[in-house]
Length: 159
Image (tube, rainbow, N blue to C red):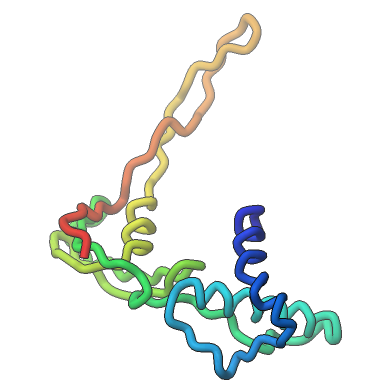
């Protein structure tokens, strides 16, 4: 956990710590992304406490991940550079979103913002022979000199 996420977690837990009441998973309603973060903080805390009692324990409360209804949508035109005529089956599951779908190159889609970021970050590295000087000698090494994108999600409109 990074320092920033620890600080964010501490900010979310402060009101709960002041109440001194246990977190009620049954009545808690999830309406925003912050509610999901609050749920996950308490679920992880419950898991750590269960691990202290029984090291082989399974998580008592599952961690939740947001679906596409919690995120802003972007209208994009999808392109695929490596196999431009094939449909791409995508399954994105990270801390931000769980999303599954199929994208056809050249078509227009309304995609959640984390999915667009994920697709635009995928790239193939480009390697070249580079001359490197060490002291007085010169030798050649293979190094990464750039990246070539695999997909393009050209943004048309923010919804």
